[in-house]
Amino acid sequence: MPAIAAPLAADKFDDMNQRHGLTEHRAYLQPMPDGNYLVLVVLEGSGAEGFMGSVAQSDHEFDRWFMGSVADLHDFDLSGPMPPLAARRI
Image (cartoon, rainbow, N blue to C red; front, side, top):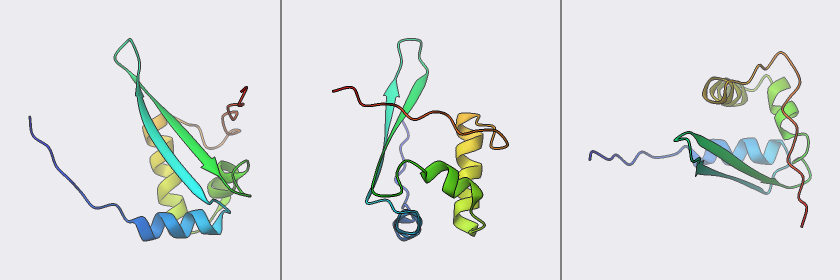
């Protein structure tokens, strides 16, 4: 099975997170029983609740690339409202 390791532009993500008030930005790939995947995203910091809307409205080049990638990968319609946030119950 082929594998590849590729660098992540951490400084660009760090800059985006700082500009939008995040102290943590984690993503997990969750396999589903039907063979598809769910991405679980955990955001922390003062900008966490408004992060998606804030990045979607940004004119910053990296933010535009990021939101375009999110839209393409997750089939989001950025012209409409952002998906609702999950609520922690416990």
